[in-house]
Image (cartoon, rainbow, N blue to C red; front, side):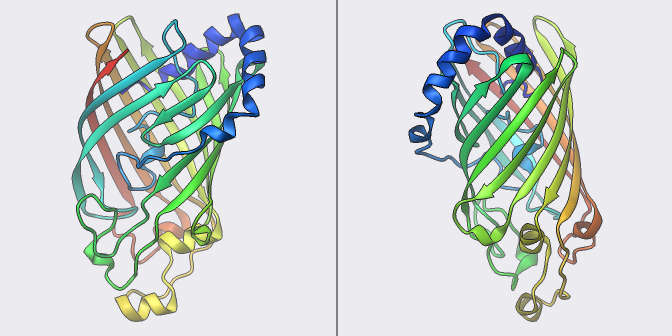
Length: 301
């Protein structure tokens, strides 16, 4: 798994030296990019907000592709994550890594397929399609959820689009904003993120990065994932609760990537999520602080 934090800085620096020709090329394919949004892939961890916690690389961000402009990474390992947002139960899961970057801005990863446009002066925008499996009150296998939620019912999976924009502050940090908008099962609501990612240390073999993200929810999303309706209260025994939208959590992450050779590398990543405000008061949030960790061995070519 490539470092989510180091990659954007390298790609944006490289872009500045070639942005004239590449910017025109990106504009030429932008109109056709929509036809490429034809497939979706499940994330390694189905638990929100695992996809934004630094555990997985973010394919929406610029990356340091090979000289040919194409880069493919395949890897795997093991991870630990909570069973759902606010759970006090944890589970071990496979930590998979699959990422393809192309010179025309199209990217494919476990968290979706999309198109990224690099803009002058370090800016970029992206759009992608992904799938989230929702939450089960009687989970099987790697399903997100817990038997503690029996009577709450299932949150259906949803295809959603992620819209993102960002800016690199020199070599110091990348600042980005993003939103997830469901295209199916739209009643689950939207989420929004503001993130700052930074590289603490970089050498030929090692990269260490940290990140901080503020997570916001629409009223529908807060009710879906943290609320308890009258019917759910009757079936589950939890008290009725209507949390309302707004800031629902902040997360801090760190990762270390070590390159053994040009192609082989390993990444160790960890994150902590603290639920805040109305979300933290939810009767189904058994732990206001959740932790995640993963380690992968990757091959890039």
